[in-house]
Length: 180
Image (cartoon, rainbow, N blue to C red; front, side, top):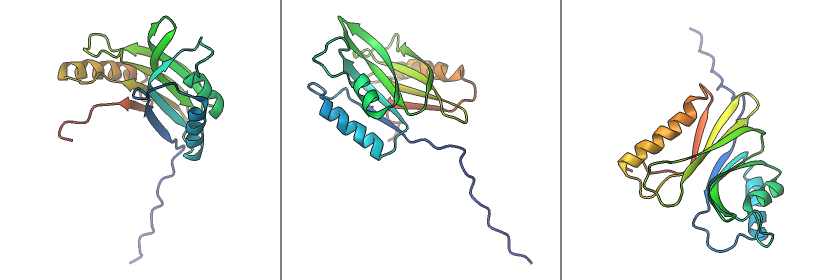
């Protein structure tokens, strides 16, 4: 009897390195040196897509370093920002950075939930070459009760469902599964 020949592992048509960062706990001003350090880390880890949550920015104040614009410039990545609130030019929200073109983006608020940090979700459709990739950067309310979790899950499901079979990645401050 002949020995069965080994089966080669399937080769992925494309692979991406994806990361997420919640900067809501960062205290103080974000300086250019910190953004350059982050850009160096992104390059060394060869990150293709980065989701950032909890950003506070002042894009019209020249004395402040704008994390979104500066990181995009330092990495050469495409970027989108999903504003969850704007108070006199102080913007809060989520961002997505991608080494691949971003075809479209939209942001949604978690309406009717008990959070107090103006949490929301930013969805981007990334032209990942072989097919579109749907990426969501989100910050969920904390604490997250069962009713609010259901409402947030419904919004995330809706953001995915209109994209058919496109792959979906949800990144951000997400609750731990029960029992963890």
